[in-house]
Image (cartoon, rainbow, N blue to C red; front, side, top):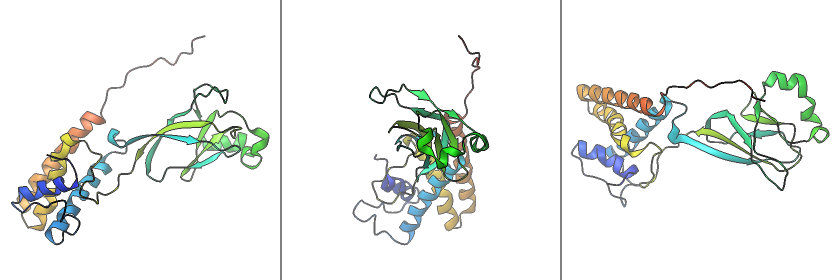
Length: 228
């Protein structure tokens, strides 16, 4: 069975003994069917709100720096940026090795390097620091003197499913969790309060299972001693 928006909606239809939709009538579905489409997105949104850093929403992005430009906006779909992942990509032509950028506090940047912003050409050099700004942007310091590539990782904001063949970011083994989340709304709409409560309980338990698998982890000790 395919794993897409159409089949997720039909999972609900089958549970309620309703006629399944097809790819040809999905877009124009109205009434009850339009509601079910909304229930699926509600379930997906609830799952995605439960954690900022679900691994299935992970993105690795490459930003090509502009000479003398220090400030760069977040990607429009970025929910949470992992600032400890910023690194400059090694490039023989640009004479730079791959290096991790150090995180610099915004206040420290203003105290020690404020002139970078107003006279970037005077300080242009290979990047060493990344700064989390107060707005939805970050700063690379010193201002780049060449078009270096900076790689970093973030977790994206998922978008609602719209077309029948759209596939959610949530892995298919947890399709049943999406179904229970949608069934809660479907049962509530029909006034089946007991069935809704059971689906909500299963939905919540399913999210907890996902968290155990994808989020909870045992950290290991790592020496911070600098070896010469």
